[in-house]
Image (cartoon, rainbow, N blue to C red):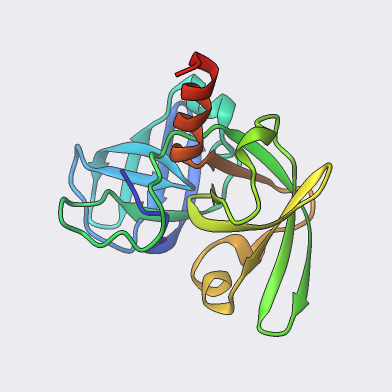
Length: 185
């Protein structure tokens, strides 16, 4: 379980089922780390670079195969503050970054609408590359978020170019509400 509050970024390289990531913090084998929002288990750590095994389903749903700079967050500990929102690390898929425009002290960023459009609601939560964000506006084929300068500096969102794939995770509470409604409870 994660909060979507990124602790730092790291250079990443994928090769033959393994992801190698330079970490800005200490970990040990068995620890869970959100890497661009995907919950992965550390299998090796040499004090600088962590190695993660990455399954085919994870590769199919994420941008980890091509990611060069990834957002990183260690798993929450019981009793930690939850500054973002509940993020499971179970990435739903990827969406394309469309455009960004500056307005005052924030940057508006547009992303294509995912197939799970039911989970995208104005003022609702979404995790993009593991970053806890609020949906600011919803349009027919895209949704917008607003990002403050701090978030652009400490995450990889500031380096996105139009067309880049971004991992997304629908808010877990929205997911359960949908399941309850589908079950007619």
